[in-house]
Length: 462
Image 1 (cartoon, rainbow, N blue to C red):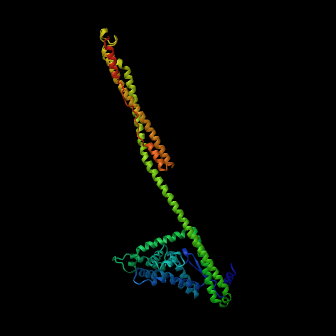
Image 2: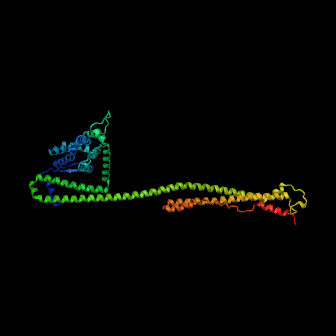
Image 3: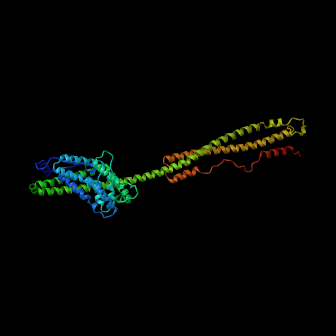
């Protein structure tokens, strides 16, 4: 504590000033502000009256003037005027009446977030009421929304005034302040967005700490200034002796406050820019992640159907392959038994040896045997081709299914993020399938072979 502050404390505890102080929830978020005298409280009241007087100077017969005058008379004055009464009762040492009035005011402020000039919303209104009066009036209206709780008479009257603005009349005709309110509803929406922005700004822990520090410093300066004013009136002789020292101290504190305020503003702006930059980077990364996830999901959905398709084809070709393999085995068995079947088909008769082919085989039996062998051989050939085809297609389906699953696994792991990688993988997946059938080019059928053998045997010898 400096020497000047030591002197202030001594004066406060002197015989010329009551040691009693008063605290009222007039700061941000109902922060308690200490008043050392009724004169300090009166000064606060005078500042608020001067601050809200801009409403009374609005252009006549406009929505802003009609709605503003209603709020000023029904809400602003009923909240501010009790401060004047408290200061007067305090000055007249009517402590019981003062305390009763204080409790009534506290009940009102517990349920109404009134934007005093020293609060963030009040400062915003002070800066913008000339350029945007309607928005500032709607901000005042929104701030005076009544919270739930136990109301006293003053709070109830303010609640009725607040509700009366937005009530639809029975005849449906809007006049006066109600018409002004409903004609300017868009401004209320913009005012609500501004309040949300101020609330978000005030909820940031780092910024809130800096703002609290600035407010605390400002409150200290105000308290010192108000106390110095009281001392100036009570101790004219002492003030004349210390005037030079006091002026120097005041200038120093104001410069300190100004430097601190500029420092806070710079830090707020830097933090805001860093926060916006970080949010932009996170948003861009999120967009890229969402796009990649969407492409992966769509590819997986499309390729899951292909996996199911090739799995079905694999099962079908495997079943067909086994069927044709069984057919080949059956045909080979029949092929081996064809001479026996031919001999059973034709009864043995006595033929002269000269009528037997090669002097050993009955012509009908031999011919039917060769015919059976030719037909069954042809069927065996067809069955072999079908078996080979379905075996090849079965392996093709297995390969496709494996490749699709590998592709999906690579997609899920993010190893096919590039378009060229996907194109190479998809080209290999969706190539045309080969049947594996070997074409017959110039093949000699078994029937032609049999006919040639028979002609050679029956041809008379030269």
